[in-house]
Length: 304
Image (cartoon, rainbow, N blue to C red; front, side):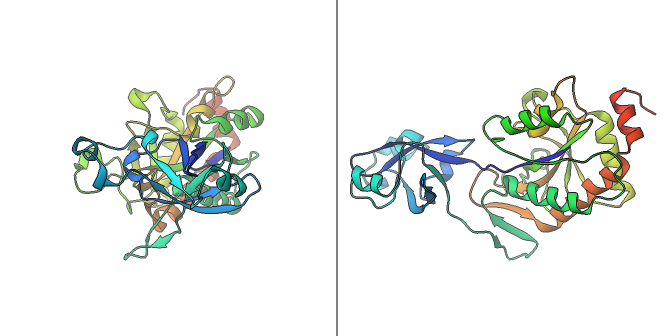
C-alpha cells in the first residue's frame, strides 16, 4: 500500500458577526503569523467560491503591546465584503463553511523550484499517481490510496489500512526543509534540491514513526543501486500517514518517502520538481525490489 493525503490545512467558519465578518477555527496546524493579510476562498455548501481576506485590527489603532504580539485566532476574521450577517447568509455562508488560501502555483527564478499552497500533500499525490502508473515487476497486489483528514489526525489512513490490510506500506508526503537563513546545518532536517528523503524517525521523541529497519534498508539500497540522490530524515515534530498504518491490526512494516519543502503549512510552500521526479523513481525502485519473498521475510521478521 502506498498512501498520500488529499486534504490541506484550512479554516472553518465558526460564527458570522452582525457586521458580516466571519470568525473561524483552524483545521490543521497553522502558524498564526502567516494568516493575517492572506487572500482566501470561502466555499459555500452549494459549492460556490467566494473571495475574501483575513483581517485583524489595523496596526494604527493597536496598543503598543498588542502590536508586538503574534495575533491569536480569536482576533482574526474573514471579510467577504458582506454588509451584514444577513447578506453573508444570502451568499450561502453558514457555520461550517470551509475557507482555503487563494493561491496559484508559480515557478520561481530557478524554474526547478515552484511555490504554491497545499503542496502538502498534492506533491505526494502526484508522486503516488506516477509511481502507480509506472510500477513494473511488482508481484503482489499494489494499492494506491488517496487518504483524507491526515492533517486532523491521520483518520483516512486508519480506515484505509484496516480495509486493505497491507503487508508493507509507504506514505508519500512532504517534510521540513529548513535550509533558510537563521537555521544551522544541523537544524535543516532536509534541503531542497538534494533528493527525496527517506524517513528514519519523526514525531517528538519518536512518538510518530520509527521506520521499519528492513523498509529503510530497502529504500536506501534501491536509491543507491539506481543512483537516485536521497537524504536521510529525522523530523523532530510532525508525522505522516505511515504512523497510523504501521499500527494497523497486528502491525505493518512501514516507511515514508518525503519531498523536502520549505515553508510547510503556509500558502507559499517551495519545493523542487527534480526532487519530486526522483521521489517517483525511488518509489518505483522500492516496489520492484519488494517481492513476495521479501514481504514474507519481513512479516516473519526474518532478515537475511
